[in-house]
Length: 600
Image (cartoon, rainbow, N blue to C red; front, side):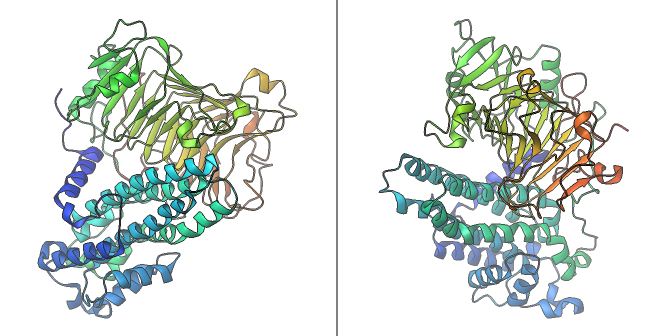
């Protein structure tokens, strides 16, 4: 098959990855990051920007009367740090990074805001090694997880830096969606490392060790998000001879669709691929069949056989069968489609769980991290049961992931919508406690959410979104979904309380709109995580829902619990919810139509 055209989010990511390779000598080598090397990166970048007028614009900002007071790097830093929550950490880290460069360019300072995260994050992740002599299995598994998470976070930072490198200063506001997407993922991985340790001495020490890294990541998110404002302060927009617009700003996003209903970022090959599947004409690269009638008997074997340098979309067809395997698709598995004969016919099943000593993220029956994943007509189960607590059926870390007509079955933590941009259409998700959780920017349309009966001492919570800082764009949006109870829960709804959400992290954000909420939903709607944690910072909103559980008159009275009007609800529809344009494919026919607005 031919390769993707160089358009849209895939092209942006590929360009960023190519930029990483071109600037390899400037990036932090391997998994070991030193402060000196980070400073060297910034220093070299600064010299590049001063020798390349296209990056600092033809006319220096210092020549403009309205920006004379900002001509020094120290004043640049003070101005750019004014938008952050941790201004002392911001000014201190950036001042050290650009020390000796009195006229460092604004772009170099924006870049440095991300560069400085690396050494602070490394210190935090590596602090877990101080516990290596512990005889606690949970601590040992936490150390191993932190090692892997550092690599993941480092890669996200590299993508963000490369994206800055390949764009001019005045173009950065339009790129903030991509950059913040990667920074949010890096922030989430830092939080995962902390959460890998149970409450106690180790976790307390990890929080302290991670403090600076998370503060600097929060600052970088703020700085990237406020780039347009910063450039306006410097009069960069008038230098460039145009007005800078913050693309993706809530309520003002613009999406372009083709005549066939598909957004412009979808290549010809992908459009054909989607339509052929709708017509049952999709031709797989390989077929998986448990009975031996295909190319492979397991999904893992099919993935392992995928060519290393394959270009285009790699298609795996999974025939009817129950596949008992633990599948982990690494980030090298890009642009992969896996489709089955139906979500209750082609099923991947496992039973890894927290109680038996496995870290939550690693309990997933099926994990995917590669860019551009598509799952169609597949089922994913974790059969550990409610007594085993955290037991993930599907973990999606992939960026630009599209999940269609799939079924996720479990109890606690069924679906880990972990990070990046994700879209779910016509899926079935079952569970009990926090069974849709993570820090992705995810939209769920036309999904059936089935709440199951938990243990007698448990309460049900549908979602636990993990937005950790206010500058993240991440959110869960449920539109035109149905949230219902399985018969066993419906029979005991008077004694088992069920809620729509609780805040896993401080700025948890979830919206339910135009959905049917069953009568088993507690009138409070939402429950605390612990004490008053996040009650003043979360954002939970509802719009035009139906059903006995949709009455908002008795909802908890926390500041962030809202009932939206139509105008506000429109800002949470596609394409506004995503901070990059044209992310979701709008598919013609019954396969996966995307609702772009509200129904009424």
